Length: 150
Image 1 (cartoon, rainbow, N blue to C red):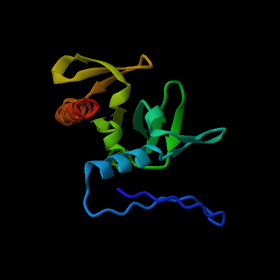
Image 2 (image 1 turned 135 degrees about the vertical axis):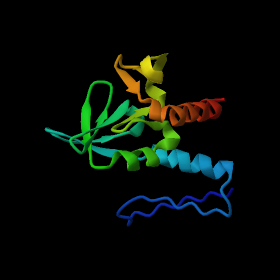
Image 3 (image 1 turned 45 degrees about the vertical axis):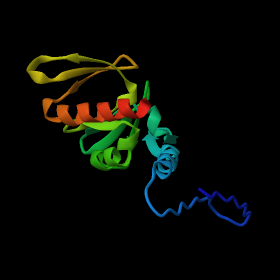
């Protein structure tokens, strides 16, 4: 793979273009890296903060608004849950309920619950319920994450 770097002081915004003949593992790695650099605007009463997706523990929709929950902070995001989960699926985000998504990288423990549901214990001590409707897609995503980390 050929890489070229150009410095242009007249640019108003930095940008990167990737040209490729076919999607290879190298290209997927480059795409994954740049996706991980994406920042999301999170709003609170005191202003806007740029959030890194990896810092988000889970997402929740309340009154048609999407909230990103970090270790101790909660921010409103101007996005839909579905779009966010599709955009960051390769970084471990998966739906666990009709109005909830979780970052698999922030799940510390999984325990069985009643009615084929699962309890997800997060790194920050919170507990979420995995609805049985989303159990298969959750387990598939968990398996993909484990295979990638090997």
